[in-house]
Image (cartoon, rainbow, N blue to C red; front, side, top):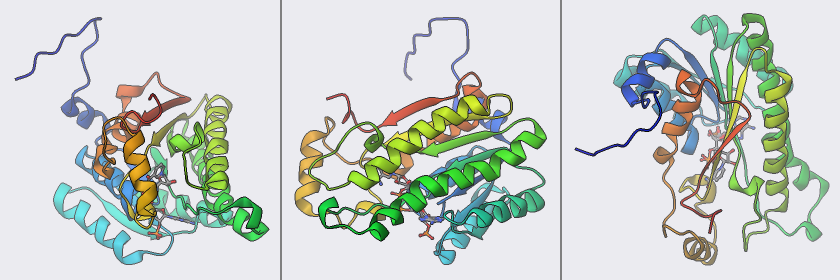
Length: 269
Ligand code: NDP
């Protein structure tokens, strides 16, 4: 019942339109067992893609998610264990996905961890822990997928970055997390040019999204976030999936090195 004014000559990509473009794709997401990654897996399956769901340790959640996608959407879906901070595990994972699915079209690099601490009291191990997953892990995952994309001559990578890549949120002590995400955003943009001949690469930066990652944040922080977020609420993981499906589909065919921010207005205010 809505009236939409369209300027320009191209049709608006409706979800049905996306569905026809994404059906028959094989997508795999690292960090797909919970939170944002689980909703992205659901979005891909709803749009008709076959989905490989990779996780580090939550095999029950990962396998249940795969079963849900098979039953609800009739797509092929399989869960895989792999720690993205291990380079060989990423290569093995891509090899298994290609063997099981026949091909790999889209990789969602979403695995991430967050720890808040005052850098002055931290140790090298505490510093390395977040970098090892958020930046090194994303690097290894992208490299493993790109080897396959180069061979087949096409591919698509979507990174989950964060508004922390571009702003310093308060009052959390998140310097290391912020650095990992800023590095990831620039790595992604750089790779989008380096691999331009065979791969599109885009980034999605969520604001504060209600997942397990943030559930133990102190109430005082949450109050401050809410006060600073123009629409006065946290995002839900399902509110992100449309953007991932868009980046995965041909509706975004001219988009590479792009960055979509989904944060309830936090970074504009
Ligand atoms: P969750 O903690 O809910 O989920 C994290 C996912 O990453 C899980 O599937 C987890 O697997 C996986 N994972 C973690 N470490 C590894 C690893 N070493 N190898 C493989 N998989 C791993 O987090 P969110 O859904 O909230 O976050 C997803 C992404 O979004 C992260 O990159 C995060 O930085 C980013 N983000 C989140 C925001 C938020 O407010 N929630 C805001 C901005 C960005 P397992 O289940 O096995 O542990």
